Amino acid sequence: MTRNGALAAVVVLIGAGVLVAVAAGTGLIGGSSSAPFDDPRIAELLADRTRHWWQGGQIPMPRQVHLVYSVPEKMGAFPDPPPACPLMPPELARGLALGRATVPEGHPLHGRPVRLIDMRLRSLHLVEHIPGSVNVPWSRISESLKSGELRGTAPKTVVILYGDLYPHFDATTPFRMGGFDAFYCLEGGLTAWKAKGYPVDSNAPVAEYLRALEEEKKAVGTGRAASDPADIGPGALKALLDRGVDPLIVFVGDEATYKAGRIPGAIRVTLEEIPARFEKEPRDRLIAVYCGCCIGSAQGLSGMAVRQLRQMKFTRLLHLDGHLKAWRDQGYPVDLN
Image (cartoon, rainbow, N blue to C red; front, side, top):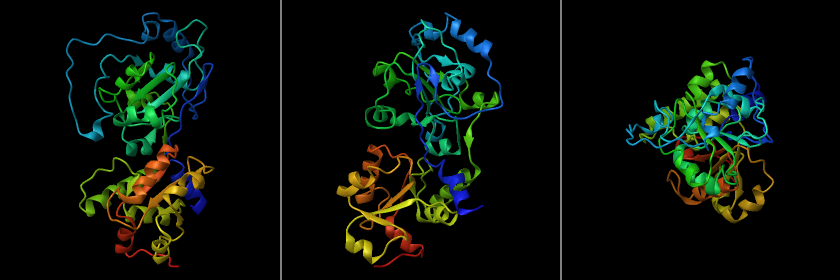
């Protein structure tokens, strides 16, 4: 594979977070599949007045809720949907998302935008996800609605949440409190979606990268699961560069430290310069950020820079765990002067 080919195969998917938009009932989500659309079934579901979209999108909260907690990696794999959250059958979800469902005037879902949200950990989203879905793990929903990927989402939006099966029980609370009246869980989750032969975006090199990242973290004794590949070690970053991935490497700090040694190809930007320097940069540009003033995992100037870039809606950010010291300790090359 050529360098450009590797870039297309790996980088395009890393950290991708495409918002789903639908105008006047016409979906704009990408992706296609040889699986035919079940138009009669979609029409039947839309016309069924016992369904939740005809009942204000609400279902009663059960008197007793049995909650089974699990490790974070399983937060998208609960066997049951969140309480008081209706289900959206996969065939209808696909029809709405791709603009293939004819929603008649007068129907509660007519003319509404649609947003598919992957509630799983980011690492799982990178391996495979429904095309066009935005990845916002359940724990970040409230924050995202205020200042992240979901900021500006209109309350009339049809929100469809999914995990491998079902997301965490608290996943729908921010939407309920935010005045949304049409939020659903994808019935059967990603598992049911794939069982019907519907398309998913997936990439073997990304899965290989994540396995390498996990092994590196075990080797250095951090014990952290690869829940957010934005925080990577020097070995994982070097592996990406060796595979032909070409991120924009950004050093955040003073000029003297930058000249004393930097990762090859890195540019220098101060915190104050970030808004102007990245104003016109594509928001899906892959950016690797580090600094040279500390050895923490997400502290110092680079940690602040990552947060600032996230607020600017950049979706593909890598943060070097251990910073320049960790890079040097591995014996990797540095540029001087």
